[in-house]
Each structure stands twice: as structure tokens, then as C-alpha cells.
Image 1 (cartoon, rainbow over the protein chains, first blue to last red):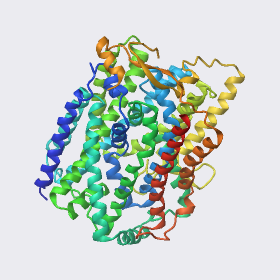
Image 2: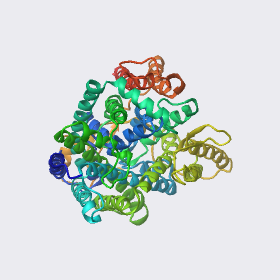
Image 3: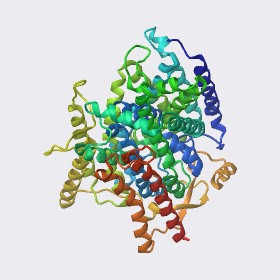
Image 4: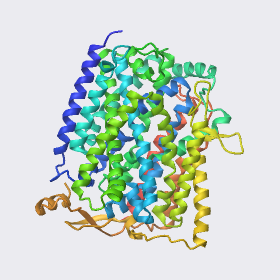
Amino acid sequence: MGIDTTALAVLLFFFIVVTAGGFWAARWRRADTLDSLEEWGLGGRGFGTVITWFLLGGDLYTAYTFIAVPAAMCATGAVSGFFAIAYSILAYPIIFVFMPRLWSVCHRHGFVTAADFIRARYDSRLLSLAIAVTGIVATMPYIALQLVGIQAVLDSVGFGGNSNAVIRDLPLLLAFAVLAAYTYSSGLRAPALIAFVKDALIYLVIGAAAIYVGVHFGFHQIFTAADAKLSATKGASFVPARSAYWSYATLALGSAMALFMYPHCLTAVLAGKSRNVIRRNAAILPTYSIMLGLLALLGYAAIAAKTSIIGVDGKPNPQLAIPHWFRDEFPSWFTGIAYAAIAIGALVPAAIMSIGAANLFTRNIYREYLRPSATPKQEAAVSKLTSLVVKFGALAFVLILNKQNAINFQLLGGIWMLQTFLAVVVGLYGRWLHRWALLAGWACGTSYGTASAYQQSSPLTHHFATSLAPLPFSSTKVYIAATALIVNVVVSVVLTLLFRALAVSDGMDATSAADYHSEPTIAHVGEKLTV
Amino acid sequence: MTTSRSNAHEDAQPPLRVTATMSEPDRHHLPWPVLATVVALLALPVVAVLMVPLYARRGPELWGFPFFYWYQLLWVLLCAAFTSAAYLLIEHHRR
């Protein structure tokens, strides 16, 4: 099959618009200089409700989500696909309750990362390092998966196949080089600005697709087709069976709790200008979940339409379900818009993730261990460079290793991120848990989760086949991250009691109770607050 | 543009971290009936979604959507409404 030139032209047009926007963003809401993490890494901490809504929406609902959720619906149905909707319902009350506290203490002390907060709260460099490394390691494969999203689009336009590897991957390389360049020069302002384009396109495309499905197929028909196919497929489910109730609930809750531990989520939250910006966003972000729900159901539309999932290379790939469905059902120009929405949907989170990971490296590894006297300017320089390294690391991951590795690591990433929940969230309310107990709990939870995920096999693969495993001493399957968190909590609590009994030093708390619900009022220029 | 930004411009001291001083704590000591309502508003969607056996069924259908699917999509909207209500309640009682 040849290249669809109309779709490609539309895709290119939007890519150029977004690129121009990305570079121009350096001047947007102009600061005197971008040479500090406050400006480069957090956009000056000045984003209001609307910009934050676009930024967080663009950040949390990624291209990989757009490709993978309907693909999972198409292949195995509700438990692996639709749980994303339950998860996005649970995430917002959690954000509403915890995030304003975290925002306040970070704003008060100039913290840029969760690990900065942990360092000050628990007076522990090691615990802070553990949180930072977890964030960086969990984010890299997530960036890699954004590339997988772009690849699915490029494959559907007609790139790929068995030709020369350089030519096959050239469009992806170019797209990423451009992304890296404007993230480097504009920092967080670039994805914040591009998010407007991304979200406008996504709402347009999903809205049109949902109306098309409603009018053309009828929802009853796509559900009937999906029910017929999934009920006949082993390991698939149209509605979770009794044995999958706990899987469904723990997947949704565990993912929701892990979500705001991710550096990209925290970066976007800290860029907000007040507590109320965060609270208001917790109330209005669910509009994206409705969109995600409709998108998920397009996976069923692809079942009803019997969409082919054979790639340019002749191999079946469920991730092509949505791009192919658009290609088959819509005129080329609209397909081009849909592809642009997905591709740009990859650029926004990839940029924010690389910034979040870079900030972690700069603040919690570079400044903490390598150069304690780093100036804000040096911090910004290191962060910019790190953002490049992180992105090209992700690119190498996808191009050199099998993309299945990226998917496995992302599965692990969710398990790992949840292990930082205890230290951060309990830390927002007090210092009941001992710093060394938290470190031990983190280590046990992370090791248990990693080992458990590694052992999951299926007829197709020996390891990392699923993120579900039986709860120890039972046959009920639950999300591995949830079991690992239980291990983490038990170890942390028991060791806290032990360390307290032995009067092991607990360090100094650099924060005060008022920091956790303070709101900025009058700006005092030049006041330097120590971390 | 915030005040801090324009002031920073006049002073031309970009390397200094410009952070607002904090005062007037976000009075989180709400009267207990209000606090209870806020907690209930935030907890309800969580409970509703975690009770999987309650909604893991095909019927009754709505506009062709099986119960399992429309129940969760409905809770997306309800969750947004409840969270907004919680926000407005907190705001109202802080004034």
C-alpha cells in the first residue's frame, strides 16, 4: 500500500504549526530569563485554571492512551481497557484532597520535585534519591511509548515496511529532534502552548467520531458485535466476570493513586499559580475522561467494522486498530486530522515527562550529590541537557530494543511509582513514619512488585505478561502494584515502631505545619528561601 | 502577569528565586457539617466505582449502552459535579 498523501499533508501542516508554536512559546508569558528551573521547568509557576486544564489534560491523556486503550478494548475488552475510565474517575477526588497541600509546601519552599519535598520533610538524602530514581526510571519507558503512538500513526499513513531502517525511522527521528529542540529552548511553556492545539484537535476528532458511530452504526450494534467477539475470545471480557472484580477495582485504584506520583503530573500541577487552580482542575478535568470513554468505545467500533490490524510490514498489531478505523471510515483529510491529534498528543506528554525527569535529575542527583553549590542558571542548563538525554534515550529504546520492552517497563513503572505514594502522601500530613522505615518499605515493595511482574507468563510470553497476579495465600487476582503497596505499608509501619522503640534519629523537619495550607498573597521580590 | 513577575523585572535579579510570602492560611477548619458533606461528596464517586459487583452487568441498557458502560460514564459526570460542589462549599465557607 502506498502513502496516503492527503492525510500526510494534513499531518505535516499541523506538525509545522505546532513546531512554530513550540519555539515561539519561549516568548509567551515572557520572563526576563528562562535560566532557572522555576521558569524553564515550571513555566514561572504562573499558569491559571485554563492553561493548567489544557496542560494537565494534554499531559495525562497521552498518545499512548489514545492508541492503547482502544487497542486493549478491541483485543481483550473491559478489564484491560475500560478500567482506564474507572481509574480516571478515582484520580480526581484524590488530586482534590492531596495536591493542594503538596502544591502549598512546594510553592512555599521552592520545591520543583516530589523528591525535593521528601528531602526537606524527612531530612533523608537516601529516601529522596530513591523517590527521584523511581520517577526517572518510570518515566523513560513512558516517553518511549509516546513514540510507539507516533509510530502507529506513521505506519498507518504508509511509512514503514521492510525498506531501509534509516528511511523507515526517519520521520520519527525528525519529529523527535524537533520536539527536543523546542523543549530545550522553551521549557514547560512549549507543551503548555501546544496542548491547546492538541486538545482542540482531540475533542474535534472524538466528537465527530462519536457522532458518526451513533448515526452510522448505532451504539447498540457496536456493543452487540463486541459482546459476540469478546465472549468468544479466551482471556477477554465484555463485562468483568466475578473472578475479575478485584482485578478491575485494584487496577483502577492503584493506577489512580500512582498517577500523581509521576513526575509529569506533578510538574504540571506545580506550574499552577494557586491552590484553587488545582482544586478547580480536579473538578473540570473529567471532561477529558468522557472523551477517553468515547475513544475507548471506538475500539468496539473497530470490532463492529471488522477493521484490519495488519501493519505495513504484514504483521498483525492491535495498536493499529484506531488509526486503521479512521482510515477506513473517514475521508483522507479527516484521517489526517485524527492522525495529527494522536501525533501531537504524543509530543505534549513527551515534552513534560522529559522536563519532569530532567528536574529530578538536576535537583535530587546533580545538586544533591555532584554540585551542591549549583546556581539556578546552572540548574537550568543541566536540566535542559538532561531533557535531551532522556528523550534520545527513549528514542534509542524504541528503535533499538523491541517495543515490547517499553510496554513491559511501563507496566513496571506504574508498580514502581505507587511505591512512592506512602512517603509522599503520609508526609503531607505528618512524620509518623520513620525515614529509614519508609526507605525499607519502598525497597521491599519495589522488589516484590518487580519480581512478581517478572514471573507472570502467558502462552505468548514468559515474563511481564500481565500486571495482575494472585494475592498471596489466595487465588484472587489483583493489580501487582496494590499488593506491593501492602508489603510496603506493612514493612514501613513495623519498622517505624521498631526504630522508634530503639530511638533511632528521625532527622529534622524543614517544613512547618502552616506551609501545607498556605496561599501566596503578596510577593516579596528577591527573598531567597532556602530549601 | 503576576506582581512578582513585573517586580522581578524592575529589580533585574533573575537568579534569585522569587517566591511569595505566605500568610492567611487556607482556613481548613471548616464547620463539621460542612466538612462531613465535603468528605461525602468526594468519597461517594470513589465508593461507587470500587463497588464493581454492583455494576458489572449488561442490563438495563441506556441508548444501546450496556449498564456496565453507561454507569461508569455517568459517574464521570457525577464525579465532576460532586467535586465542583465540594470546591464551592469550601470556597463559600472560607469567605
